Length: 201
Image (cartoon, rainbow, N blue to C red):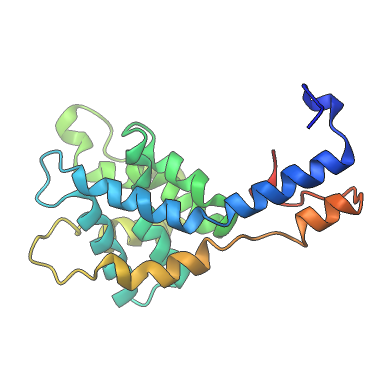
């Protein structure tokens, strides 16, 4: 590569980079699974570790008849904790954003505010902070996510499904989603080479 700054990029260089990034992006499902496994070391005073909590949340969603997208979102709702406890919902939601609906994205992004109903009153904070979303079309789904699947999933005796059960779902939901072949479009000089976030650089 001859360029040393982005504005020097040539079409053929864009095509090479795009192909490499597309290949690396295809490994996202494996990175998601690695992040989930990293949660196993996080216990922080709960009765189960964060991996078990995540698996249990997904198991409850599955048994309640949730969509595959929502089951995977339930599984991954706390993966942001691998990076930071603060704003972990936002971190997880942004990772999932290109692969899920706006409603699912919103549920994951705000799930800590719905969970706050159960503990904010004990730490001198507003337990009803989630009420600001009451007019949103996804509000009822967020309540269901919180009340039926998330806040109930700290039970060491629950029949929780293993990660292997969800791995095919992770592969499907986090499959590389592009509107056309990004690398091929770049090679052809298309002005619409990067239609989705997943292959930008």
